[in-house]
Length: 163
Image 1: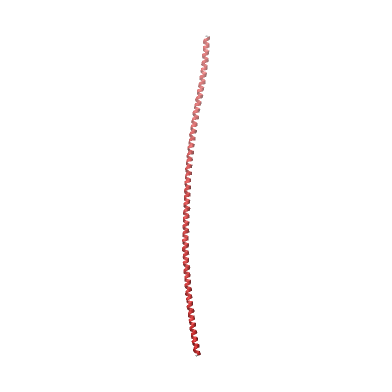
Image 2: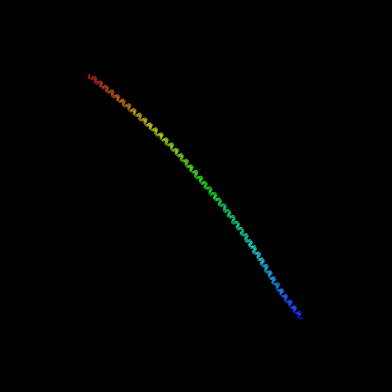
């Protein structure tokens, strides 16, 4: 009986220890499941965060590409506007050169016309002067001839009176 009691006591002790260990193992398994669930939740949250960050990176890359396109477009537009400005300045230079050439041609025509007018006026003045001079000479010649005729008549009259 004593052995049976010891055996029973030992069995009970072993059973209690096994139950206690089972409880510890159950609690450890529950803790492990909790940790596994938390790990899964943390992993899912991390994956969600990573996915969000990947989206943000993709959006930032897209924005960067858009900005690069905008910069390239602005550079092209600036180059085009520079070319257009150069072309505009060249066209303006050509227009001013044409205006200058036209003004020089107009000045030359006006100068030649003024020169012809001055030459014509000079010729007319010379012709009038020549005509006036010839008329004056003719009048003077006529007066001289009239005076000579009058002097001859006086001389003839004086000669006739002296005879």
